[in-house]
Length: 341
Image (cartoon, rainbow, N blue to C red; front, side):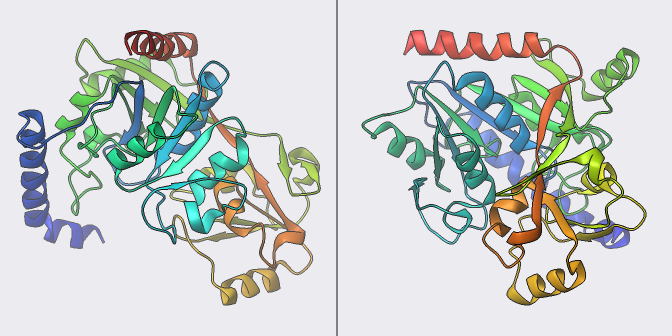
């Protein structure tokens, strides 16, 4: 694969040139960006997948939803519907996509919508009788047709965008210079004990501008797993033989948190839609053992033939330090923007 990526280097140069021209045309207003008269926060990345957007969106939901009427707007990756869809009691992962349905399933006090056309999606949300005060755009860093008021850029510890290259040679969707659009950069999936010396080393590597803020987060796992009917403490099932199932990008830390010697790990592609034959195969392998999956996979699998033995492990994004400062930055932006609007 590495050899193939090297062979494709000329295509990476071409792709980088095309994306740079596109960004330049948006920067000089030849291509039109649309702004809206309410706080819009875009969360995204420069690389493809696996930087922890979902837990970061959930962190923002927890921070803001008690104070403001909040809506999330996602593309709805791999959903089986088209256009604008607003989540309701009849919605499922097939209609919304797994991540938006997870938001809807988890947070009852927000609006959840999907639309590949983010401009149209925002307009539809603002046409509702109960329109939101704040909109969170999920995975919209490259969606230049909407000009968000605040941009949060995520990059994974150990896989920084500053050390990467443009597709298909690397994993970047656009040039590293795109990071200049970010108001805040968050290095995700850090060790919990990340030292200040290492934080400073990473800060130098990223080479941010003075007006950009940098934070470091880690993935915090729940101490329990959940099904529709039951809760099991992780420590109590450490030595219980089980199946660990993940259809996410970079599932290694999920497996590492739970795996014991006799456990079997089953990994599938990100956002994987499980076929009936795959479900039957998983059930056969599990026999009567419990199956533990990720929260994102659970919303797709909970109505399947695995339901009776299926549990999920929730995660959340936590800051190594500086969470109060991050919260202050977000609340200041939202408060000021709301007052201005």
